[in-house]
Length: 353
Image (cartoon, rainbow, N blue to C red; front, side):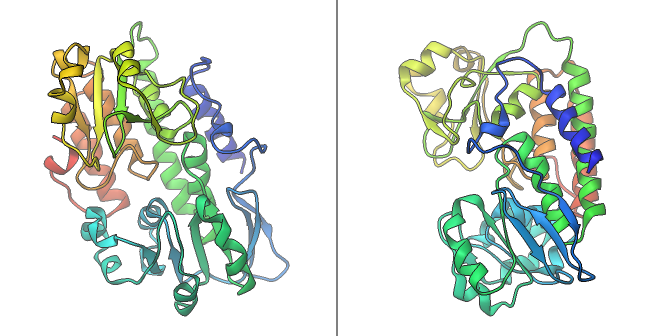
C-alpha cells in the first residue's frame, strides 16, 4: 500500500503543482478520497476485502475464476492483468473492439451483459460469476446484485489518480496484485520519463481535444484527458471547464481560445473536415497551420484511461515536442508495451503513424 501511495503522490508532483491542474479527487463527488486496494485478509482463508471507487467495502470469498465486466475500460484492464481467461461476460459491442480481436479473440464469443447505461442482472447471474465489475454510473444496479450474494465492485477511472487506483483495485480484487504492480510501475516509469523531458519547457503549446459527437464537445479540467495533455507538455485550453464529463461549448469560446493544436478522438462520429474545412474555424491557428489530427489509435482509444493510456501520453509528447522524443523511440516503446501486456505484435499504422 505504501508503494501505491508513493506512486499517486509521485503522479501529483509529475503533473505539476499549478492551480491549472485539477484536484482529481473532485472529479465526480465531494466525498473524501478512499483507498481502493486490499484492506485486509478476511478471517476465512482465501477471502479478501477491498474498497471500491464508490467507497464501498466488498468482501470476496475464495478465488476469483469467473468475472463479468460491464465496462470496456475494466475489460481491457483484465487483459493487461493476465486475467482474460477468467472473463465470462462483457459489455455490449465487444465485436467492435480491435484490441479484443487481436489480444483476446475469445471475448468476441462471450455474452453481452450490459453497457455504460444498463446492466442485465439476470443474464449475469446465469454466468455464475465470482465477481462483477461495473462502471460507477451503474450504481443503481448494485443493490440487486448484492441481494443475490454476488460480489460487485464499481470503478471510476476518469481522472489520472482514479485510473491508477482502479488498476490496484482490480488487481487486488481478482488476486493479480503482482500483475497490477507491474502495470503501475510501467505507467510510473513513463510519467517520470515524460516529466523529465518536459520539466524545463518555457512554452507549452495550447491544445484542444474534441469529443465523439461533434467538434464542440470537449474534455474538461476535471477529466483524465486534461491530465494527459498537461503531462505531455501541452496546455489544455479547456482546463477551466468544471463539468465532470464531456462538455458542449460555443463557437465563440473555441475561437477565443485559438488553440495551436486540435485533436479529434479516434471514435468520433465525424471526420476531420468538420474541423479543418469549417468556415468558422479558418482563423484558428491549428487549422491555419494544418495541426488538426485524430488522437490514435485504431487498436483502442488512447485518450481513455486504459492500460494503453501511457502510449497516448508518449504519442502526444512526440506530436507536440518531436525534438524531445522521437517517432522512432515512440514506435519502439509502443511495440514493447503491447508485446509485454497484451502479447501481440502491432504495426506502425495501428500506432497512429
